[in-house]
Length: 231
Picture 1 (cartoon, rainbow, N blue to C red):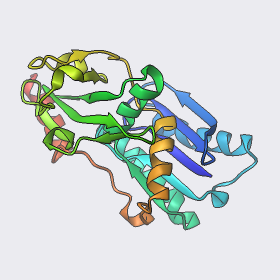
Picture 2 (picture 1 turned 60 degrees about the horizontal axis):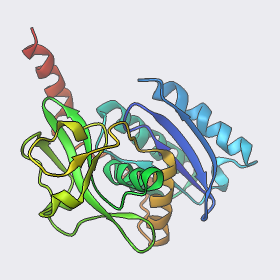
Picture 3 (picture 1 turned 120 degrees about the horizontal axis):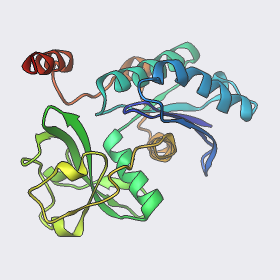
C-alpha cells in the first residue's frame, strides 16, 4: 500500500493506493490549512483501511513546484513519516500531477500544465499520455519544468494540438494552444498513480533525499521584495 500526499498548492489531499486503485481518499480546499489538516487526514485514511504507517510500502509526495509553504509542508511530512518508519519515498512533480489530473478528469492526452508562480511568472511543462495511461514529459525543452514570464514559456512546436491546463493557463498569451480546465488542480489520487509507477520502476529514494523543488531561487527573498515593491 502506498500513501500519497499533496499540499503543494492550496488544496490538502491524501490517498491510499493498493497497486490497482485508490482505496481511500480525503481532500480539503481550505486555503493555508495544510499544516493543521494533513496529519488528521492521514490518520483517517489509514484507519479506514485498518492500517498504520509502518504497514505501508512507500510514501509518494508532490515535491513541487508550487506554493513555497505548501511544498515545504508536503516534503517535511513525507520525510518525517518515512524516516520514523524506515520507508522509501517517491517524489512526484506537481506539474506532472496536474497533467495526470487533466487525463483523469477530462481525458486530455496532450497538455501543457501551467501553475501561477506569482510575480508575473508561471511554472510550466508539456506532457503526453503514454501507453500505460500516465502523463510523461515531452522529450524536448518544452517537457522540462520551467519558471518563466507569461510570454517566455517554452511550448511544443505543435502547440495548437496541446491544451493549457492548471490555474496559470489563462496567463499564457503567446500561443495557439487553447486554455482550458483553469480550475484543475493536482490531487493525491494523481500523485498516487504516478508515485506507484515510479516506485515499481525502482525510482524511490531514502527519506533524507526527499527534498522540495521550488524552481525559484531564494523564494522567501523574492516574496519580501514583492511586498516592498507595492509600498
